[in-house]
Image 1 (cartoon, rainbow, N blue to C red):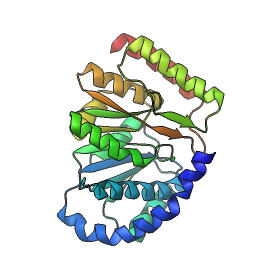
Image 2 (image 1 turned 180 degrees about the horizontal axis):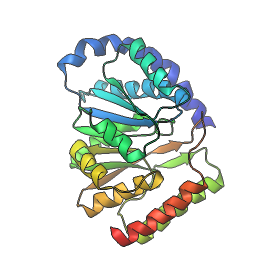
Image 3 (image 1 turned 90 degrees about the horizontal axis):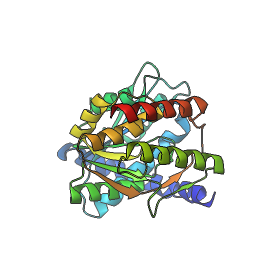
Length: 274
């Protein structure tokens, strides 16, 4: 709970800085190429998307303060959320006059892989971040993702909860055991060479993500496992950054019994096909 409160307490300062930064972005964005495209699939994330926007811009500003010369675009792919997530994004575009906040609305829930493809179709960056909208992924780690990828030339950098320095905040014992068990089974059966197969906070070079999205067949939660397994099978290099995963504060988790069954079926299919 302390971590969640500290996480939210930082928003007031971040929001003020983002407002101050909006005019500066408007004056410089046309003279600098987009470096990173951040693709955020959403469904019923009205309560979270504004906070995530502020945190991403705060992380971008922190990177620039360290001399990284970044310009990030945020591509929100919304699957016709009945809670009005798209309307919030449009309000943010207007309030911050941010040409690098892009809304890609779709007719309904069409799958995670197609959401990434939908975002990639308009992405201008040479690197692409995928992350969840529910505030479980803290954008402060993006700078470390970028540093590691650029220094070592990785094709993929994955945030991991299960390496030293990583962790999970806010999960009960059942959820922790489910996640640990899912990752253990995948490591034993698929030998992927990565510690966190079910995470969805990752950095890719844009061409690599485009190739992987075309190759992956799975939908839902299995998608994240298959994409990292296929990355290794296709010869792409994968680095890892320890992250702290914070359980969502607002909204409901989309993980249920059906998703767990689908994961197990997908695990067996990958064992025989990849």
